[in-house]
Length: 206
Image (cartoon, rainbow, N blue to C red):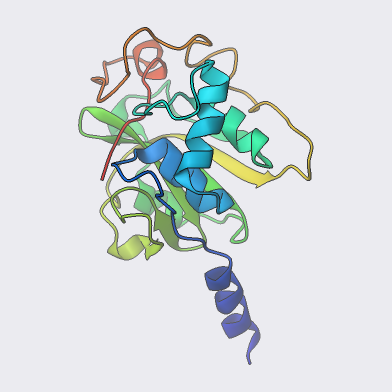
């Protein structure tokens, strides 16, 4: 087997599908964490709810960056902010397709926050493949996916923590508030300006 074929096979074999064992619709935050870790969505939601001080089976719609980071940490991963475009107008933010053309570590997972109309949405990228609620929890080629022209406003690199829990780097003090909002942050409108956009949660179902 050639080196390139071996690399492609290695990337393919490491990609895990989402396991929705809840019997109901799940949203983008739990979806991407299930694809990342291999844990079922019920376990992922339990970790998010632990961060929220809510019952483990409380239904989750929108998720805030530090909630995703806390759940990822509990499940063995760290999130590091590697690009922040919140200071830019949406039209000036890079598209998913333009970002895909740039060099990056093909073996690492990248969690991207993108604009989808009036909503914010989480997608997970590894190599040339994407997983989210739009792909129904399966890994698809980005070139065949629905988000090529979507604008990115955050990029996180995700890596195994080797059992060491760590907070998400670079966003705890300047993005979403630390307390859970009183209302479910589902489909919140993305207002203009970086401060307004930084306060949005991410909620996109299948």
